[in-house]
Length: 333
Image 1 (cartoon, helix red, strand yellow):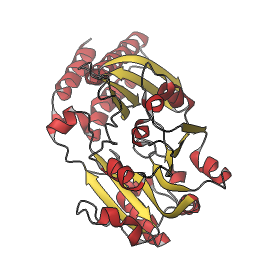
Image 2: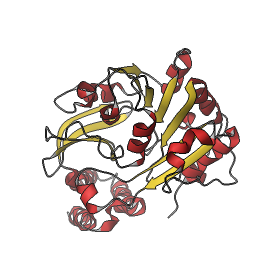
Image 3: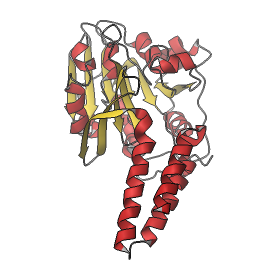
Image 4: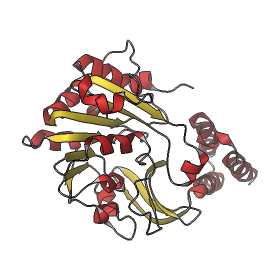
């Protein structure tokens, strides 16, 4: 009984501090009680009460995100559609990672929010490089379909999504309407993006957005020398690759910087993590995006902006299909 009360009290205390987003604090907050709970495993009643306390504490820890409207678990984890505490937005959350937000205000429901906000790096890239009626855009990672807000009539857009539950949620207009409201048709290709891109040998894109790296478990096979070579084969002359590299646990900037250097590509990165309280309230999330192109001239529209800088690199080996090291990319601070 005391164990449960103490665990829930600690969770409520941390929820009200700035430490609630610190992965070390979260690990200690739940890891230590989980270990104690395991020590109770020979005592059925204590063990059951301990597990119950952890579940209750976990529900308090997630409470600030709002109320759950829909949840679906599959091979890839748990996707939740939530109504935020203010009642202004629908959220798509996979595990503990936010993958989309849409305003319920009819006047704002076509706005791309979170990491895709018009004033952020993603909005800048798409408004700069996907503005022509003939633009062809590929997006790896569907989420709620937020980027579809940038589509214009006549354009060709393709999403590549491995999780069928995500596609079902994004297509459900009771939850999100980005796909329905898009000015251009949205084609969705199910399955692993790398295999799908390799199979579509005739496709060529002006902008390719890789948005599959913000979760706790990233698809390493999409961040290798061989994967980058595939993207370049699908990239039209003068085209741009945009990578969403925001990640709570991994510092991916030098990983992608090393890939660009190895391939002889021009690359820029924009850190947009300093979001004003007003922008945050209006739905913008901090994000970091990195772009690559075959030549510096292809990135001229961004290089004039001082917020875009050359990405960091390091002496670590380039990731390949035979080698990668998440441990070396881990944020230890």
